[in-house]
Amino acid sequence: MPRYDVVILGAGAAGLMAAIAAGRRGRRVLLLDHAAEAGAKILISGGGRCNFTNLHTAPDRYLSANPHFAKSALSRYTPADFIALVDRHRIAWHEKTLGQLFCDGSARAIVAMLLEECAAAGVELRLRQRLREVTRAEAFRVETEAGDIAAESVVLATGGLSIPKMGATGLAHVVARRFGLPVTACRPALVPLTVDAAMLERVRPLSGVSLPVAAALGRRRFREAMLFTHRGLSGPAILQISSYWREGEALSLDLLPDAPSDWLVARKRSRAKAALRTVLAEALPQRLAEALAPPESAAAPMADLPDRTLAALAAGLKAWPVTPAGTEGYAKAEVTLGGVDTAALSSRDMSAKAVPGLFVVGEAVDVTGWLGGYNFQWAWASGWCAGEAA
Ligand code: FDA
Image (tube, protein in one colour):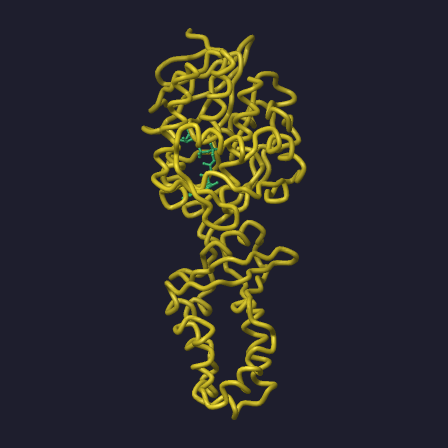
C-alpha cells in the first residue's frame, strides 16, 4: 500500500493551502479530490474575480457555536500573508468595497498560483478520485476506488453542503462522525430568502430592482444592496442577514438608510406641488416607488397630505417588516452554517483532540464568515495552520 505522511481530502481553498504548508515542511503530501478540477469554487467566486480576502478580517465577522475558536488561526495566517503570496505571483488586485479584495482579472490566477505552490512544495495531486472510507489502525487508511493509501495524518477539507451540483458532499462530516467528532446542526447560509405567496405577489413585479438598504435582525444590521428576485429577496444585505435568520423571525428593512425619519415631511415643504409618487421616485427606484405609494394618495400633491400620513409612510419605508418564508437552500447558498464541532478541535492547528493525526479545515468546520472574502480567509488560515502541524 503506498504510504504518505499527509493525505488531504478535498482540493478546494483549504485543502490546497494545507497541502502547500505541509509540503513546504518536507512532508510527503497527497491531495485527493473527486472533481475534474481543483478549486472549483474559487473559479466561480466573486463573479469570476475571486474575493480572496477581506482587510477587516476579525473573529467577530464569523459565526460559530464558539465565537472565540477562529481567533488563533486567523491571527497566525492573516490577510497580509495571503496578499504577500498573491503579490509574489504578480496577480493584480483591488479593493472593491468594505475591505473586499478582488483579482483585477480572472479567479483562475488564484487557482494557478495555488497549484504552482503545490507543485513547488512537492505535493502530489490526484483528481477524479472516488473516496470510499477512512479508517485507522496503526496508521490511517484512505480507501479509494483506485486502491488504498496509508497516511500518518489525514486532513478533512471537503467543504460543506453548499451547491451539491458543484460536487459538494458531506464527506468531512461523515468521516468526522465516524471518528467520534460531533457535527453541529447545519443550514444554508449567505443564501437568498423566499417570501410567502401573498408577499410574492407584491414583490415579483419588482424582480431585478436593486437598492441600498439596511437589513436588521435584533442587534445585527447590514448596510448593503438588496435585490428583489422572482422568489423573494437577495443581494449582499439579504445574504448577510440570512446567516443570522431563523424560521418565523421578521427582518426589518430600512429602504432609505441615508434618509432621516422626517424626510417626507421635509419634502412637503420643498416639493409642495409634486405628487407623492414623484417624490418617492426621487428617493427610490421608480418601480419600487410605484409599488409602495399608497394608491389613494400616490397622485396627490405633497401639500395636500397631512404630516402624520407622510410621517407614517416614511416610518414604514425605514422599517419595512418582512418575515421570510424560507431560504433558497443549499442549491443557492454560498456557504454552510455549522459543521464539525469546534469543541472537538484544537483552535491552534485544527487537529482532532481525541484522534491524533486527524485534522478538519475550511468550511467543514463550524466556522462561517460574513460575505466579502471572510470565508476564503478562514479557508486559507485554517488550512495553513493544519498544514503546519500535519
Ligand atoms: P471547497 O468547497 O472550496 O472545497 C472542497 C473540495 O472538496 C472541492 O474541491 C470538492 O470537489 C471536494 N470534495 C467534496 N466532497 C468530496 C468527496 N466526497 N470526495 C472527494 N472530494 C470531495 N468566499 C469568499 O471568501 N469570497 C468569495 O468571493 C466567495 N464567493 C463564492 C461564490 C459562490 C457561488 C460560492 C458557492 C461560494 C463562495 N464563497 C466565497 C465561499 C467559498 O467558496 C467557500 O467558503 C470556500 O470554498 C470553502 O473552502 P473549502 O476548501 O473548505 O471547501
